[in-house]
View 1: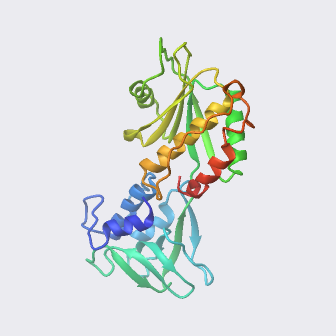
View 2 (view 1 turned 90 degrees about the horizontal axis):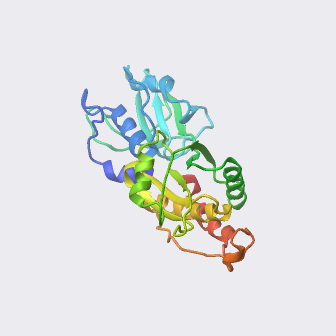
Length: 293
């Protein structure tokens, strides 16, 4: 969900995230962290001003209010206790050097979620969401191939797309055919990770497909099942499917078509320069989504 979609969803409505003390400005903050940023909640506070010190440092960059500073849409604004004894928090909608408009609740007291114009008086500053790398889990993946895959994706995206990864070893037996979607989802359910992409490798058999990609709604994760021994080109190809599925299932507009491009010759499938793969072209098409993932 984007900030604009969040504003549209909750404008003229009350939010009571924690079901305590009614509809407070901090409820707006916590709902935004849950639905838009999809991050853990920071510790409970006695007043909104406390968010300035209790925020999750791994999730935000804290930017103090200065004469030349201007918050961006989606930044979380935090006021000091000088404002009203408790402080206040809201989400920036637009801003310039002299004033800004934010998405507020309970300012004025008792008000529903709405757009409110403010000066910078008593504003401590704003919390800017830190760019979170896209986490990939490799199940039974070989370290050398993982490193080659990450290097190639970095090359095709000009390092504009940041990935982190973790590796798991899980016994998987597939006597014939490919690992089914249901089997893959069961494997994912057994892993303790917040990865948004999974590569699940299994021992090949005569009926194995090169790769099959799908999506796990309960984990909000896309995945591909791949027989061991496939060339790294297959992983780079499968990752395009994973990214498109993640983009589309999370309703990141505009919709991106999950197209198939194959090597000109399957005998040369391991060759990254095989004209049919069109890796550079495909990753360039996805570039507008990199900052949303």
